[in-house]
Image (cartoon, rainbow, N blue to C red; front, side):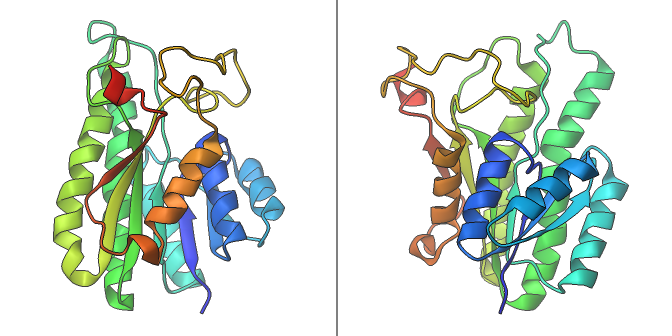
Amino acid sequence: MERIALVTGSTNNIGRAIAEVLSRQGYHVIITSRNEDDAKTVSDSLAKKGSYFRCDFSQTGEIEKLFEFIKEAFGRIDVLINNVAYTKNESILDCDLSNWDYTLNTNLRSYYLCTKLAAEVMKEKGGGSIVNITVSSARGTKDKFSYMVAKGGVNYLTMCAAIDLAPFKIRVNAVGSGLVGTPVGYREYVGRPYQNEMIPIGHIGNPEDVAEAVAFIISDKAKYIIGATLSVDGGLNISM
């Protein structure tokens, strides 16, 4: 039976790397983006041709339409990777209500809603795996106010959903990324140095590093792991 994987925000950086790794492992991957042409381009380029769907994850109605498509097209979902992200550099003093709402809706509310809707389908089909992409940091970060608040919520969403869904053979975990690839929100390399003395391993990561961790945690090799966050950050968080 064909395995179906949804990766939210999957046309660039970490999301695209996850989609590519899962496709090589035989999953039919559903690519999502606010830009339909970008989503189609990535879908067509995968090792195993996938599907695509245009979705603005800040909008509840669009997420609901996405899951209607999944149920009609496939009747199942085996893996959900909540990866979509938005950030704006701001302190609490700079954060207005409009940006707060957009950031929380994209980075937290979409994770809740996608998890809930996926779990409803997985429950009927005997189980599945959900992975939330978060940050490895367990500390506050300067000028990333609403983004880091949202990621804190994602961490607790992961643990609480894991407890609620474990009886239905639905495993919920998270992968915490450190400095990887290009910063969130950029499509091209914008000057983040590869070598970095702050990171114990000496350099930033590649998107594939996060993707391979995701592939492990959804596999049967990790079948006894629930509610965990696997840090992929070269040791940055533990060294600070």
